[in-house]
Length: 221
Length: 210
Image (cartoon, rainbow over all chains, first blue to last red):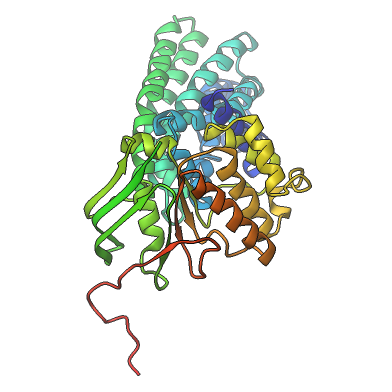
């Protein structure tokens, strides 16, 4: 097994167990999605109009939950030192950590997203598209979130700082993903929004690791 | 393989405080060096500077026989106070991963488990291990993955007398095979070693007035 795949397996297992892992993220997601109708009112028509957007905002918030421990734990227990002392570049190490995060929390959230959207009154026919956009969006959330997690290394209340750093970076995927779903619901082509979402995810995948590795090196020295 | 380590004119500071300056030290194949010095004198910082994790203010860390980035990636071991083990994982999972991460083989890993008598500990979660047992699992990396330069930060502090002696033998074997050891210690190393005391910085403000 190569270093990268061994690290990916370890990170996925750790993210699965980290602070409850997917169950807590999905539970939080379900909680936010349930809270919305209580605040907005139970009229089905009004809820259906915001269902897709609400499902996406809740998704973005839920994917912030487990980010704060992504690098912090390895930084505190010395694992980051050992991860840095390796032939595998720190950039790829950071990428493996984010991929593990995506598999352990992004994918379960993507499975929960269509259920929440339909529960809020979105048409059932949109479920596959909600799932796919949530999956692509989750990848962007994990890699952009990793930047925030790495930048707040060593800071007190790092988790809160991570959320504040990351939230503005989540604006584009929320606009693209929510936009694609909205377009599809009103019978317009959904591909432009979806492709922009994928482009954002690919950019995060390519540039995020460089920023994370630089932030980790800075925190270690 | 790293043939020697040459530190010349090193100076480093942490958090704005000068730790040491103009520190020079050469370590050749088969030599061990015990770094001593008061708490906070910069022993750990020096080890981390050799590993390339800390930037030095001045001076150079030179590796003879290997390119610095290659030496740091696959020529040295750093074993510090913190071992990077996750409390909820078993010792076996952690040892397997770190051995693979450092490029070790299965045969060496089994040999290391035997030498350090870890067989009965491997199925326990890391959180259930005592400090000494946990350190033995961490030290197994040294044997599981043969690398020339060992950077050890108080490697023996949690170990009992029996395992300190055992580590002395392990270190002696490493040195006999042409290895090098740079260890930060408060007690003498259980193996023939030069002692290098990190000189206190120029100011004497930290001395206690009597």
